[in-house]
Length: 130
Image 1 (cartoon, rainbow, N blue to C red):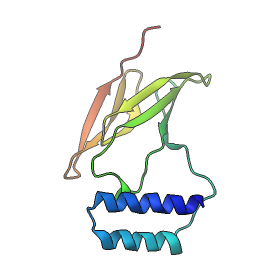
Image 2 (image 1 turned 120 degrees about the horizontal axis):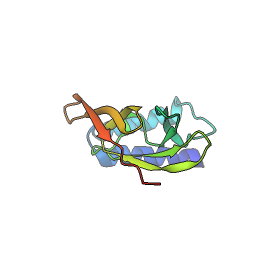
Image 3 (image 1 turned 90 degrees about the horizontal axis):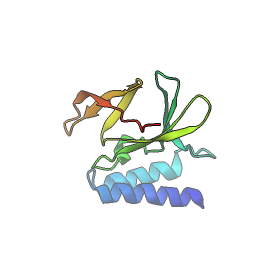
Image 4 (image 1 turned 90 degrees about the vertical axis):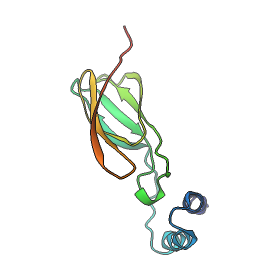
């Protein structure tokens, strides 16, 4: 079943990461099989933001459970649509960067280092010429 495939992938990812040891993966698998609640649907988006111009930013789905995140952070990808629902393009945010706000030409957020300290970052948006 789809549920079984998901459980196997999640537990396998935890085993491969290896940071919490094999007993943690076994406990996690037991929780998934006995007490976890399963939705009939999976979300396609991780987060939804609106920028200062009214454009909608849809973050491509990323795994949000901290104990299952990869040990090496990966970039996040965002699809951007204007108020007329037209696709404007995609933006890739650096690994370990969480977007908090977007202006017409800047992306604001924080980057988290290996010690889990948060650092404010502001990136310039480079838009294609029309």
